Length: 362
Image (cartoon, rainbow, N blue to C red; front, side):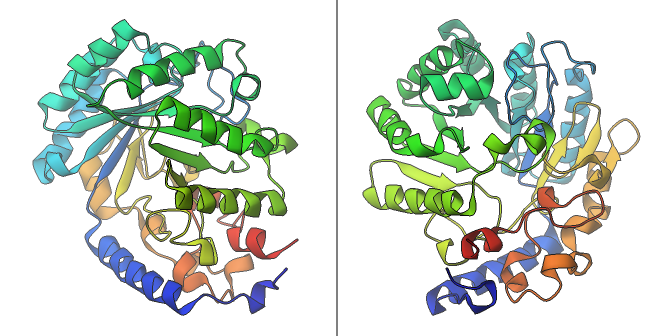
């Protein structure tokens, strides 16, 4: 295995990464809001082993009233083009909200396009139609393996059956844009080819594969953490699947992956949290990415105007010098890695996980 310091990027990769670096620099200067996540609830009907939010069926925190989020959208619409901002509704499990259709209509009426992240358990044909009538534009559906692996991961014996039925609804709707999301762990890693074949047989065109970072319930669960060899195997699998051309597989947005850049995802790595991506959490906290630790929150909608915060804060997300510590202090890849994803920084700003080490170390 190549030593970390001896690892070399190909000339072609360096050219594309330099271009991506220029685009990132311009985005930091202009920080155009392009995606806005809304954590609409902390309630969930499953008990997923990897949940970073530790969501429950009965949440300690009440759902945010839709009117409060609408005020955020009104603030955004006054100061930017709503047509260029995509709203992603997440949770918890958004379908736990009975008023989700009203939320969707309110988002649409304000000029925004919206989509949903769901485990699919409550996505019945009737609910799907009502959400489509409320202008739902995209769906990200979680499927973490075939039946045994998915149900083990999701903590529900009927999880896969419902997710599969939800998938049928999506596949059979030619107007719906959707993808399937899979969190790769030690248990489902050996079965990635079978999962791929299942999705292809169903008619799925887009598949995103995620690694699991050490937070929430996953922090102390060894089954959630791939070995370095397995991690490289996952990247090789994604690369081969893309080359196969039957389904468009992509690695998630987390982490700089060296010469795998351009081979496992469409665009070179660049953490957009706080640069083009913002979030409103269920307690009103103004965040960047919902996966980032709460001490990086930048304000609260019950005390601050969202767009004032967006335009004037987010300094940790838009600067890099403070990240030059620990593994990043003298790293020759920092120019392209930018200190890795913000959600991989701990409360003290230290990097918890280096993807380049995972690629180069045994």
